[in-house]
Image 1 (tube, rainbow, N blue to C red):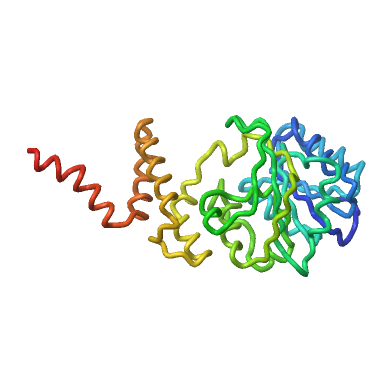
Image 2 (cartoon, rainbow, N blue to C red):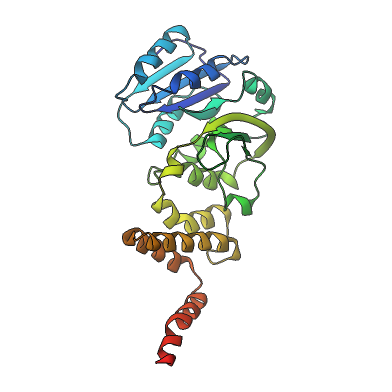
Length: 292
């Protein structure tokens, strides 16, 4: 580990695994920032390609770069490890294939990082080559309580006060794909938030959340959101969420993925209003009996 600023303003945490193709561009987007009061922690999951060599080369040239390489339990484990080592007053996460939007991003965001006024500063990102036809589209905005039930803040657009992790703990590794959404739900109603209408990062597609579902998160979502936001589990606030789960189990059954379909059916039945469920059963099966 190189020597650097003992108390930097911002810590950038980059989780890597077999990221040889992308890590140079990611780190260059950070190292070229006109804002200099930062440290960079690269937390590698024991990559088997040339990732570590590239990290070492960068760290030899820039004393603000620190790194760790060891086996981990996934990207959120790596992010937790970065947080425990962060010395910055503010923490920001980048994926190894993401980029800060330009060399002035941190300088422009720095005036908004005022711990006396807020501890959760969020902005916007732009999707790049995500495979869903959104290339060049901005994503973000200021979310309401209703909207945080529908979509997550991108962690690549959030500056967290380091003290948030002291207060609320780190990412829950039970949620392999959407632990960042669970964390944001956990803190949403309890932190002072500020939205800045600015693009801070280019986020490239193909990440974990776009390729794998998170059954544990979907199973626990209503309980998590109810607890965090003070909503009743059967309230209308969750209606769209329940409909999405319903569509998910139907899609699994249509694709003959019966095990996954049954798991999501059970989530839907657990979350659905019993009266609605009884009405559905009557329409499906009661009508058939009467016809017979």
